[in-house]
Image (cartoon, rainbow, N blue to C red; front, side, top):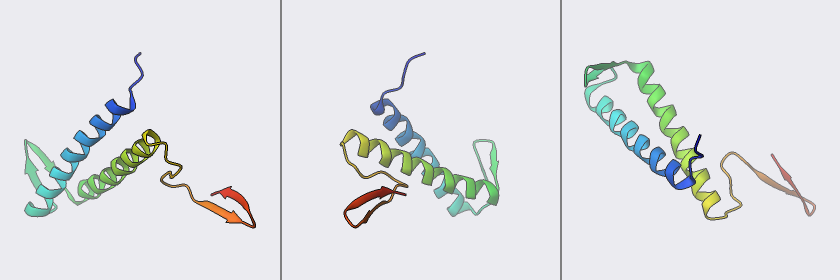
Length: 88
């Protein structure tokens, strides 16, 4: 089994993000109950699309930060207390 590189993951995530955003945009134009490509969407699925967009953006940010050797990581807070560092 081949290991997926960061560049390959970014490309895959960005493609999926573009598709998810396009789906969201169509749902916003057509209403939360819509059909395209033979697939019906409801309000629950609209909420799932929004959650998936958020997860993809977080994953993309994390990979981009790692590739750039940034110490900033999504979901991690660095707290300085009297010269000591703690991760939360």
